[in-house]
Amino acid sequence: MLGMLFNDKECKELDYVLRKELDEMLLDMGDTRLDHEIRQAISNRYKTVFRMYARFAPTKELSRYAPKGRFPQAKH
Image 1 (tube, rainbow, N blue to C red):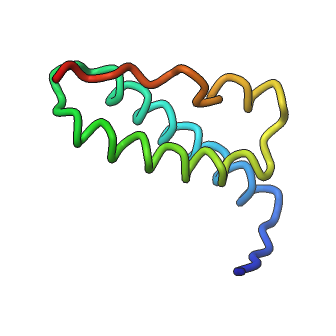
Image 2 (cartoon, helix red, strand yellow; image 1 turned 90 degrees about the vertical axis):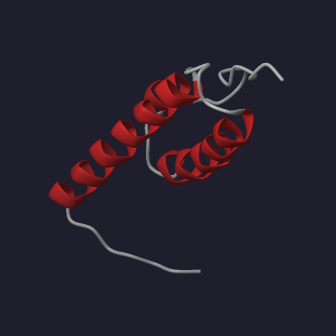
Image 3 (cartoon, rainbow, N blue to C red; image 1 turned 180 degrees about the vertical axis):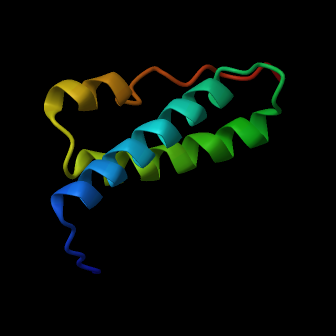
């Protein structure tokens, strides 16, 4: 386990960076032009970043990015 201390400004920046990354991955996962394997890799990464964000995000914000049912399936 790794522990880190952030000041208020750094926490806000980390919050911003993680939200933007989650937004970008949601857009990519919704892009049906991408192969299933690529979308699956993005989905796995999304889950990791989401868990990081969930450690300090307010519940209201967290529900916006909850992965439940948000990953469209690629057609084979």
